[in-house]
Amino acid sequence: MLKFFYTFLLMLCAVYGPAARAESVLFLSPGSTQEAFWLSYSQFMQAAARDLGIDLRILYSQRMPELTVAQARLALQGPDRPDYLVFVNEQYVAPQIVRLAQGSGVKLFMVNAALTPNQQSLLGERADQLDSLVPNDEEGGYLMLKELIRQHPPASRDQPIELLAFSGLKITPTAQLREQGMMRALAEHPEVRLRQLVYSGWTRGRAYEQAKMLFRRYPKVSLIWSANDEMAFGAMQAFAETGGQPGKDAFFSAVNASPSALQAIIDGRLSVLLGGHFTLGGWALVQLHDQERGVDLDQYGGRQRLIPLLQLIDKAQAKQLLALGASPDYGVNFRRLSAKGRPTSYRYPFNLQTLMR
Picture 1 (cartoon, rainbow, N blue to C red):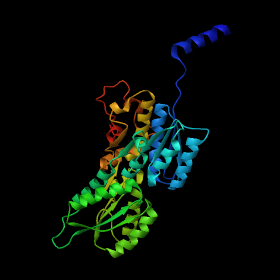
Picture 2: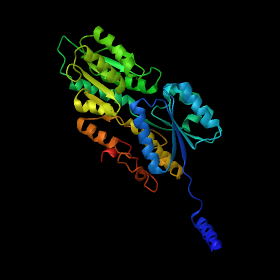
Picture 3: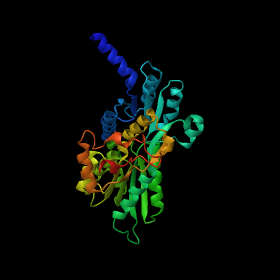
Picture 4: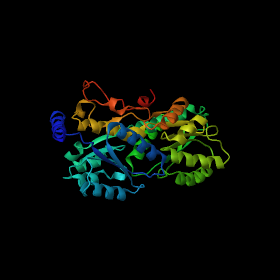
């Protein structure tokens, strides 16, 4: 009987082959577990990994690029190497990670921030071998200011609309692109005057301290553009302490579909909110999983893509996203998004609408 059992197992192996091994992925998050955006980002990745059968690990670098590079070095040169290393080009760490990956056998996938032109020149042909998925940050910065101006009452002939802007880190491509978008929108509206642009390091506390000084310096400011939600909340706190009411006496904007930001749109304290890029890591897992299954990504939109994830979120969509965030899988069947076996006209539906169907 035992001999028959072993014979049966051997026959199964001959027919079906060895069991498919789940690909292993290490994601190096540049943020911390205290940041709502990077937490929601990780949760969406974990939902995708569960559905796709991917072995996912996540490490946080607490906004310290030197720690990101150290984590990458251990992952790429140590004994327990993942199949894929997913990382963000935060504070220009990409060239160091690409160099560390040489000869490691680990495949790289970059999310959120693309290589700068200087980095592409520095890396040469190696830049073309780096898969990436990044959002429309420049367009996001543009859309955010355009919508702020649209909501503001028309300017009087002798009194321009005054604007303050809070950006992240000056050496972060994401912050630079969002600023460029804001400046493009500003050039289309001579009735709006940018009083000051400051760098708040993506943090609420820094933005709060800066805003306290800026609202005293520019008491007529009525538009506040912020490159993320944490800085917007810091500025809103400072504005409220002056006796002003956010959403009524001044119009605030933010990027990131965090629960707090979604609730602030619903309550009317935030006037403009852009979001959607917290899904990037999850979408990246769909692509690399397809690649492991033999899908030629060049036939389905390319291996290095910019996708229009950042979009304006209204109150109804904010309520829907809040409800979806409470679901462990966000209501998404990630396996059904695969390009495997589809015609080459298929394009991955990587957008918020996929969540809100």
